[in-house]
Image (cartoon, rainbow, N blue to C red; front, side, top):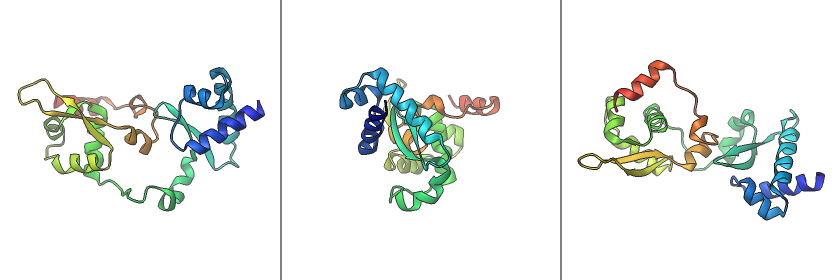
Length: 177
C-alpha cells in the first residue's frame, strides 16, 4: 500500500484543486476501495504534528493544503494576490446568503435593514456568490447562493458544514422570508 498511497499523494499534489475519489481512481488506475484506504493513510500521516500539511475534503473532493494553524503566516505570500479581507458588512451579507440561500436582494435587505447592492456586487466580483435563479413572484427577483469558491475560501466540504445557528439567529433569518 506504500506505493499506492505515494501515487495518490503525488496526484493530489499535482492537481492542486480538489479531486474526488472516482477521478483519483481513474487517474491512478486503482480501485475506489484502494483509493479510500490511501486517503486514510495520508490523513494519518499528515495528522502528525511534525507535518505542516493536511489532507482536506473540500467541495466534494480531496486536496492537500497547509494546516489551518499555519495559514495566517502563509496566506500573505501564498494566498490569492487579489484576496482582500471582507468588511463586516460584506461578511454579514455573505452569512445571510450562505444560511438563507437561495435568497433575493430584498430578503437580504429585510434582514440587514440596509441596502445590499454594493455588498452583493462585491461578493459576486470575488466569486463568493452567484445568481442561482429567479424567485417565482411578481417582478421575478434574482436569487443568490454561494459558489464553490466560497466553499474553498472557508474550507468547507459543503454548505451543511456551516456552523449551526442558535434559535435567535434562526428566527432573525426566517423573519424576512
